[in-house]
Each structure stands twice: as C-alpha cells, then as structure tokens.
Image (cartoon, rainbow, N blue to C red):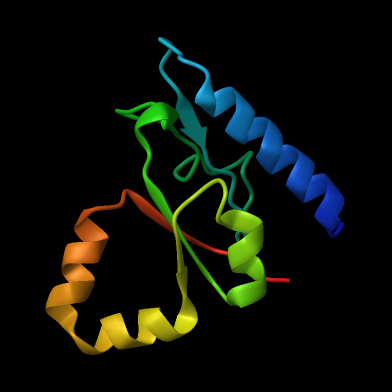
Length: 111
C-alpha cells in the first residue's frame, strides 16, 4: 500500500471544498471500502453496501482542532479550536455538548 503525499492530499481536499461550495441539487453517495483480515469479497458479500446521505455538503458546519500553527492555515476557511481550549471544554461536559450540537463534524489536522 502506498502512502499519500501531503501535496496530493491537499489538492484533493481543496478540490472537494471547491465543489462543495457550489450549489448542487444532486444527492451524494458515500461508499466505504474495507479490507478485513482473512476475508474474501468474492465469496462473502455481507460488508459491501452503498449508503445514501440525507444531506448535501453545502449544509455541513465543521470545526477544526489542532495547534497554533495549524490555526493560521485553517482559520480563513473554517472555524478552529486549539487543543488547550478543547481540554478545558472537555472538563465541563455541558459546555462540550453545547459546542458539539452547534457543529455537524469535527476534524483534526496532523503534520
């Protein structure tokens, strides 16, 4: 299996972000490929399936999590939360739940 370079990953993510910003009236599908140990997909078809999403990417509200350097990279595109603030929020479960309700997804950036 090959490792994906950072440049290839960033170009793919940017292309997905650009297409998601456009208004789309089509439904989107999520396809998940899994590799299991000692599993023959030609013989067993239990895991293979396609799920239809009930929303489009235009309605996603995401929050980024990372350190200060990553904050400058992502701040112009998405709301961002640093690790120290996340630790403080995690101590007060009520505050964390309120923050979680206001976003559809969380993402973490690693170097």
